[in-house]
Each structure stands twice: as C-alpha cells, then as structure tokens.
Length: 238
Image 1 (cartoon, one colour):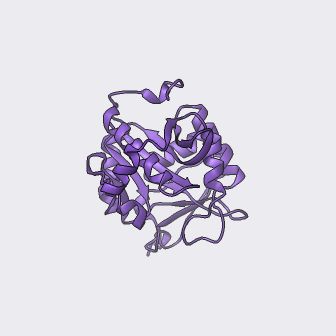
Image 2 (image 1 turned 120 degrees about the vertical axis):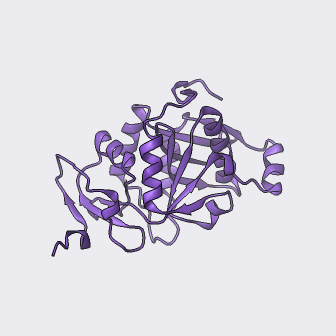
Image 3 (image 1 turned 90 degrees about the vertical axis):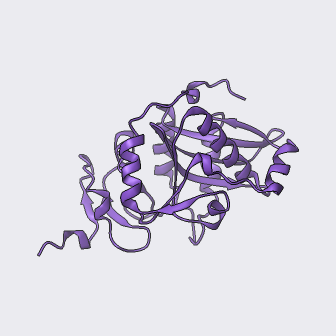
C-alpha cells in the first residue's frame, strides 16, 4: 500500500520539485513538505502551485497548502460603515512599494495569531526582499505623517495576489491598507486574493473559505492571465 501521502515530503535543498498540493496532510493547515530552499525561483514555483512557506526560527523550511483555503474576491470586499467613515477622514496616507523592507520588518516583529513568536525569520526577510527586487513581492504602506503605522505585503503572479502578512501600530491601519489594496487590484484587473488561513479579521472584510481543489483550479486559470495594468512597476506612486 502506498502511504507516502501520510507523511510530509522531503525536498532536495538544491533541486526543488514540489509534490502536488492536494497531497498535503489531512491536518490543520495542510503540511505538505519539508526542506528545499527559499530562492526566488522556488518561491515563485510554490505560489503558482498553491503552496507557501511557514515555519519558526530553528525549524526546517515547512511548506503548506491548507484545505479549505481562505480567499477574497476583489468584487466581494466588505467595508463597514465605520471603516468607510474612517477612510473618508483621510487620517492615513497610503502608498505602495515605497517601504517594502520597513513593512516586512514590522510584520516580523508582531507574532502571528495563536503563535508564540514571529514566523518571519531573517532568511524569510532576505527571500522576500529578493522577490521584491524582481518585482514579484509588493507592499502597501499606511502612514500618519512620516510614521509607518500599518501595512501588508504579498506576492503578485498573473491575476492573483498572495497575501502574506499585515501589521497595525494604530487601530484599523492594516484594514485601511487592505481596503486600498483590494480597490487597486480590482482596478488593475486582479481576480483573486489568497488569504491562506481563515481569520475573523479577514472574514469581516469579505474573505471566504473554498476547497483546495477549487483554489488550485483558480490558480491554473489566473496565474497565467494578464492584468489590465502593471502599476506595480511604477515606483513614483503616492
């Protein structure tokens, strides 16, 4: 009997070939594989296949593909009256790709919900910095004056934005950044935002859970599709 799917796959540290995402373990968050590397090529391959890295300092690289998967369709964004009112007050200034390293470092200083410590290691900081330099990873920044008070970052491939992490130093700053992001992605022709794992925070903004196979079908369709605008390439945005 073939029982290989009962255990995480071990990846070669140099020549990384991912197993099919639907072979992930049938346990919370869907652990798929261990090992490999965090090169730009490996990360790009992983995201296209519905796989992402998530591990703590001192652990080997762990690769996941949850089932169900949390996603947000840009057209289905929900903005509460109170949040819309806050946005109209223009308390925050929003930019994108102006402070990527500041955003990811701020995200790394805040533990992910239900974890005892940060999961964004120095290795991850460097890896996503490399993706940003290649125009694949992007950030949204939320400012009050010259202070960065919130933001998020993720990976853009085709018409899919894969959200990675967000932070707030003042109330609702990350929500305002996300609303801006979703509205821009809708204008630019993106079809799907990957939220990875369900959270009440994202559900309140319209995220829903779908089966992994449905998510993978979306990736096959949208990761190779062209967007209407490549505004990420413009570094002079405000």
